[in-house]
Amino acid sequence: CDLYNLGLTAAFPAPVSLAAQERALPFGIIDLAADPAQLRWQGRILENLRPTATLAVGGIGNVYRTPGLGEPLTALGRPDPAYPNMAVPPSTARAATPDGDDTDRFSISDRLRVPASLLLEIDDPRAQVLTEHLHGRLVLRVMDDSPDTRIGQATVPAEYDQTAARALSLRDSALWAQEYTGFLQGTTFDGTHPHLVAMTPHRPGNMPVVFVHGTASSPYRWASMVNDLLEDRRIRDHFDFWFYSYATSSPIPYSAWELRRAITQAVDSLGGVKADPALGHITVVGHSQGGLLARMLVINPGDRLWNGTAGRPLSTFRLDRRTRQMVRETMFPTPMPEIQRVVFIATPQHGSYLAGMSLAQWVGSMASLPLRVSETAREILTGSGDSTHLASRVFRLGSVYAMSPRSAFMRTLPTIPIMPDVHAHSIIPVCGNGEPLATADDGVVAYASAHIPDVDSELVVRHSEHSTQSNPFTIAEVRRILLLQLAANPDLAPRKVQAPASPTIATPQAPRP
Image 1 (cartoon, rainbow, N blue to C red):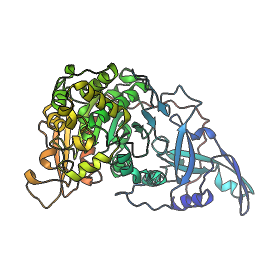
Image 2: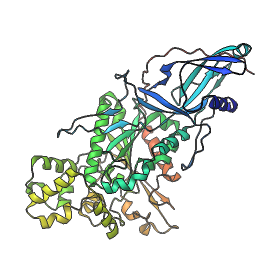
Image 3: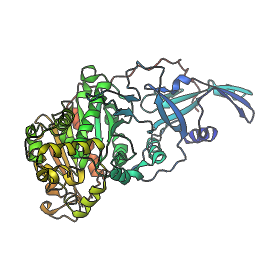
Image 4: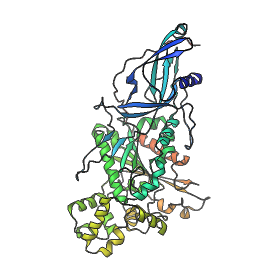
């Protein structure tokens, strides 16, 4: 297999063309047929095929490959306009909100690469090799979606370099270098509006897992965790991975509201829970500030969050309709029924002592806020009749201020319980050499702040700093929780998407050597 695979890699270097072609041989020529329908995959068209056999991978904890037969490739997928009615989402989903905002908040990634494998099949090869004119076929396999290859009486799996494909996706974009710039500019890490990105097209029956990164961070921080989780076939076959990107300097209630709208738009664009019950069994995994956003989706505070933060009932403010609507949507959240489970990782449930430091708050004051947030804050102050009372409360709703243990928001949020029908889990990293948990921390958040009662489980990850997403114990715990989610929903099963029919490719029946 290795000799065959490396031979194909040498014969078909980048860019690999999956088209009919003629190749010269030392003793003649070979005509190669290729069915272009093979490039259609789950409502996408595969392009930019690149070999991975000779790539070395670094920067990711574990490197996985599936040994077998075929030249390992990786491909990008773009929307297939020829099949708009297939049971997969389009590249972007758009839904207008009551205020007229029709921003795209859900999309399928156009940067993540698909592991694939290329075969060269020859009918009756021992007879053909004695001639000067050979005929063969180029056959493309996509990981998990293609059958094994029959050679004589043997069944041989295809070769894939899945980690190399994922690493190449990261290297080609390299957007993680802009995380701090995005924080200060008040944008997402890549300068776009907040949005939810699916790793692959949704498969009916798959339960979504939403990963929400922390402050001055990006979805790339989940790379090692996702690389490990996808190696469990049960997780790969029953879950879809979605990643939320947001302006991490914005107020936490505002970012949580944007996340809520993105998830709602995603579910609606996929037909809703009635069309696919799996969309009603969402797991949200939040790191640091991302955990606070997740919590905002599974609580029912009524007016407690607003009153505790602003110090006065909303009815005492003179606000125009648009501002009042914004306040109600961000500060009076209701639990999302689609979210069944939340995982808090290094989450400052009672605030971060680092955010309370003067230097951190000075940096936070340099960050830009969305225009709509600034306008709402000014309107609230104008309509309060007592700007002195609220100045330190309203204009300190940026994420850094809000995560200070002394902030009114942070003192109020922990008093609001998570809905009893939501399963909650805590993963809490701590540094040091076995200090008592009462005094332990991860360099950003103290254990006492991350700990909350009444969760389904709590795992303390020793000798780990705040960015614990790549820690093998953290990854193993997330894997355990997802398998628990799968066991709790045994009736949900992925349903195959009906792709366009393609001509049947004959199986070569060569004698075994």
